[in-house]
Length: 72
Image: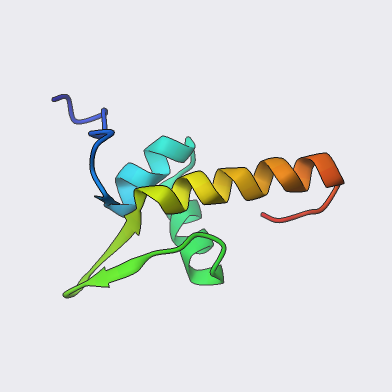
């Protein structure tokens, strides 16, 4: 598997993998996590983003776009 392609079957993604899936930078992804807009979970000393949290975040963005609400 190439370094730029996240495995679509992974349940937990690194912040870098989550950022790539969202087509945003790592710092922006950490900002979304810090603000609570993107769910993450601790795994020991690491921070991981559940794959379904990305789907939920995108769904909220789409809903906000349709209703004119500002999220991110």
